[in-house]
Length: 117
Image (cartoon, rainbow, N blue to C red):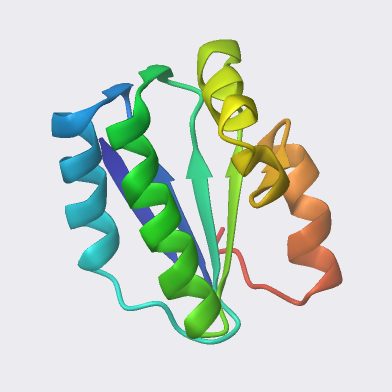
């Protein structure tokens, strides 16, 4: 899992499976960064090919922490198996889901988020 921090945009890029072990790793990465007002947290799921119910926990906890801090958390590049889990649990209506990073750029520009070069 890689983690990139660029001023107000925080990018999480979990890889492989987000099951109990992968979910704990994602939780640790997210807990290491305190969400701040006006930040945008992006969880890029392009390299995640499997998620079970225990993998949903860090996403929901992260979303709750983000909202309480005035931060915005979005998902992008959600692969079909992961999208199915989100749809079955009806979390697809709770999370903002974007098809790609390019779609998120419109948020960044519209909301004056700063991306480092």
